Structures are given as structure tokens and as C-alpha cells.
Length: 137
Image (cartoon, rainbow, N blue to C red; front, side):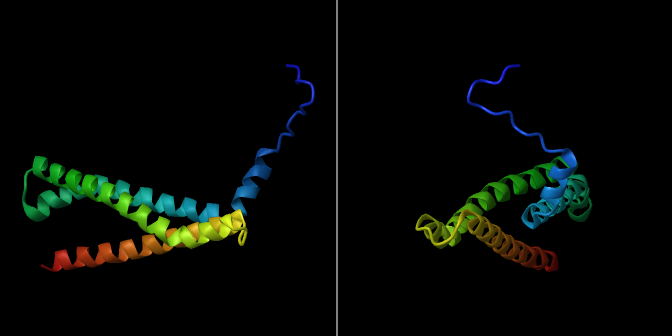
């Protein structure tokens, strides 16, 4: 295929160089590990939660399935909305600083990761508190 006039052919980077580059990026690595942990947890819940609810609360499979599905749907929607609102509010000063040229895009990305980690930690902490309180009653 002919290259149009005035354009250069892109240099191809070997796959091992690409892998080394992303492995040296701690933000990418931690986000990937975090998502893998999340996916593992959701998979475990999806596999065992219905059986647990059936046995623990002595209900039929249909009731257990609808209960887990309803909880997942409601908490998923509300947590996504509330989490995004919280993150936007917490990131507002950093976005303003970037818009004013006080910090660069890379620094903003690190602040985004930091804020996301804080929101995730407190969300899990509060969720565990209610889970333990509910199990104790």
C-alpha cells in the first residue's frame, strides 16, 4: 500500500517492548490488579451467594436469586452514581489547577487514582460495617 505524500510510516514497536513499558507503569499495574480482584470477588459471589442465601435463610432458589439480583442491581446503580458524584467533587480542585496550568495531565491522573482509592476504601469500609452489623443481628 502506498503511503500518502507528506505522511511517514509508523515505526512498529516490538511486543516485548510494549509489555515492558506497561509493566513499568505502576498506575496501570495497580489498577489491573484491583480490577482482577474485583472480578474474582464478583465471580465468587455470583457462584456461591445464591446457595448461601438459600441455606442461611431457608428460602427457595427463586427467592434467593431475586434477592441477590435485586441487591446487586440497586447497589450497583446507586454506588456508580454516588461514587462518580463524590469523585467529581473531590477532583474539582485538581481539575481547576490543571486548567490554570498549575499541574500537568500526568499529575492529574495520579490525583484521579488517589481519589478513586480513597472513595473505594471508604465505600468498602462502610459496606463491611453494615455487613457485620447485619450478620450480628
